[in-house]
Structures are given as C-alpha cells and as structure tokens.
Length: 142
Length: 134
Image (tube, each protein chain N blue to C red):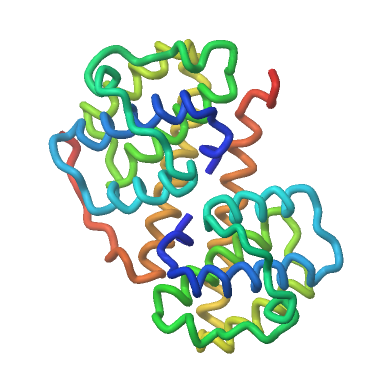
C-alpha cells in the first residue's frame, strides 16, 4: 500500500523480512505468493534480499532516521503475515523482532496490526472476486 | 494491487479508463493524483495514454477474461474512492464501464463497496504513520 515510498536499501531489507515471514511457518501458502507478487510490483522491481539479512538480525540501519519507513515496513510485513488469515507463532516472532529493532511502541503496533488484518482480508476478498482465490478455509495457529 | 496480473494491452486499456474516471468530475484532487502516479509506477508503462481511448474508444475487448475485467473494476473503484468522494460522474462512468464489461448492478455494487472499504483502510493506516520528512 505504501511500499513505493521506501528507498532502495529499505526495499532490499523489506524483501528479506518478507521472505522470512513467508518461510516462517515452514510452507508457502498460495495467498502469500499472490501477495508477494503484488508487493513486488508495488515496489517496482525491488532489489534482491541480502543473504545475511535472511537469517541474521533485522537490519534497522537502512531505516535510521526514517520513522515513517519503519512503520510502513512493519505494517506491510503484518499484512503478509495475515495473508493466510492466521498470524502463526513463528510469524509473530519475526514481527516482534522487527518491532523491537525499529523501536516501535507496542501500542502503535497493535493499532497497525488490526489494520493489517483488515488489509489482508480485503486483499483476499479482491482475489476471490477476481477468481484467483477460493473462499477462505479456517486454519489453526501453529 | 492486482494490476500486474493484466497483460500489456489490458494495462493500456486500464490506464485509459483510469484517466477517464479521474477526469470525469473535472477535478483531480491530490489524493487521486498520487493514486494515479502509483498506478503508473506499478503498471510499468512509459508511453503516453491515447487520448481517444480516454475519451471513450478504448477496446474493452482485450479484457477477455473475467479475472481481468474484475481487476479493472476493483482498481478503478479504489481510484474513485482515493479522494474519499465518489462523485456522481464517477458513479456514472463506473456503471457504464461495468455494464460494458458484462457486470450486473449487484456486481458493480460489490466492487464499489470493496473500493470504499479499501480506501478507508488506507486512510486509517496513513493516520497512524509518522508524517513524511519527519
């Protein structure tokens, strides 16, 4: 939704974080793939994720002195984490790591999280209307 | 959101329709202008829009699948609501496009409802973000 605002280094870190979220629960859901494509398009041919950022600490350096970009990244990561309708434990762990690395207050995160869930739902609704996605089935958290 | 699922020809037609919609109320507010910029960025088109397509001659036949037609309607509704004001002229344009794309009034209403809610979420997220150049 706001990803085009990120700088190129920020997009690079965001791609790494997105990849971590998608892989966090050990499987890539169809919904996550569609959302990944959509987010990549929004960023306009984003750079590849640095390998060290896929597994190491969250690289907050690229977001220094840019609080808006931090909030955008956290929000969009939470949208991705809700793509399959459930915030899994491992996904939540990544989200929490991002939040603390970016020094975003928990209260703000909760507000963003509620909207991220709504955004994920409305995205899936659009996919259903466009025939890319069947009606959601209930899933259980890990 | 989904416009990259469109083919190149479909994107060109979509863009012409987007301009037609944006210009229909004779006023392009900042929010709508920014939304158009974002659409252009995502579409990856660098060519100029054919003014005749904007005026009404766009070949809707290239929207030859239901997903493509639905994506066009969804994205146009998001554009229409980007300034929080669904102008009567925008409503008329959407009704006309929807009918040409073989959607029923009930379908068009579902697309409209989706666009309104999508716009609402965007605005609420924006209200939580630190301002630009903080």
